[in-house]
Image 1 (tube, rainbow, N blue to C red):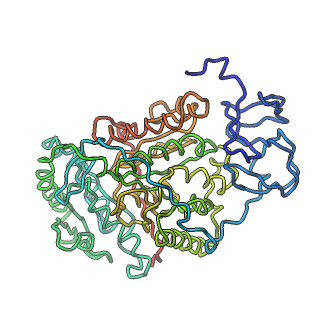
Image 2 (tube, rainbow, N blue to C red; image 1 turned 120 degrees about the vertical axis):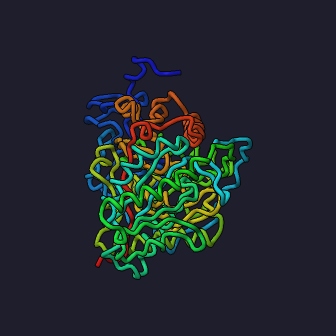
Image 3 (cartoon, helix red, strand yellow; image 1 turned 30 degrees about the horizontal axis):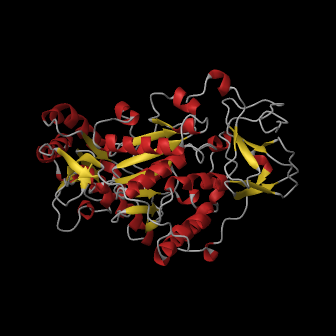
Length: 511
């Protein structure tokens, strides 16, 4: 039952694990000094919403425990009932990658879910799609202005003639020239662009716009043996002819795409990406566990689920490697962590660079606490595979897709891995969206869902106040994914046309 106004005024905190010696304040606006909880705990000072309160007296260097894990050490004595902000927490060292248990606690498969379907578009290669759109890729950033101009005209003059096609998307990026194209790590951006160009939501239609002198040849974005249209701007006579050529090729592809109709597809055809951004202390309590429950439902129904963000997994890696289905998958997961540790070392930073000012205002003391909440998105299924950045998903079940934690870079890499829908949790709030796939936004707090009533699709904040359970919200997310994948519901980001740009991950040198 929903809480009434009087009940909402009752001071509440959430303690996650029985061994935790801290809890987070639930009440909107926080609670003032002198507040007494039902258990008798009295606050010694004002504690903001989502921030930690000491449940016991802590001596200097005592462990601070949340999620049943050490998130840091007290930098000075902290009295019971005191606010523990990030300045009072010394971050621990990360788990040692060569001492991790692997595949020794593999979860047993959950009961299968039968009979769930969605209405999607069937592709010639057997894959399914959640949208029917024309994607026009670029081999170099130089052509972006011309392509944007052409796409604007295509949408105004041509697209209305093909009502079964939902959109035309220009896939601009900052790669293609001025880069060390043969450097070993150049495989990451190139693989990403190749896989985005052939995303299932484009219905097998491949179109590339290039300049003509770039290091990344346009034809390299088309898989061997497949047909695709290539427009090279340096071969055209003036700007007008460039635009005409793009529009002409687009028209032919729109004709073919327009013949596609939605058909019933099994949920096992879906690839769903899980991501978080603007996280707060509620992320690991409400939204991420609910998304994790939905992830389990998807896996039970035979779908593919990706979770990502290396720095937001690194400090919880010791909880994940035991869940890998075998030694090979566990070693691949560790390999991706090691690669990223080295990448950060080259930049002379460590994983602590991840945590944002907004994360801290939302109650997260450090990346350790953030990571422990982030991995809740993975649910409880066995991890059956690991993808390198931008690699395409080719198996069913729960996969770890290694990406940076940056919302935009992670989103781009998950698109390359083939997601049809993305579920995005947020505590601080972000209007993030993607042009290629729908993004379901899940808020962590009631106050955010109320403030951003026309941006947040699912309110998981009800879990914190006892108005809903993790399971109930998880089922809500699962059912919404089906509705959105079927085109029966639009997410708020889709309704407003909110689309973030592609942001490639390029660890190779720029020349």
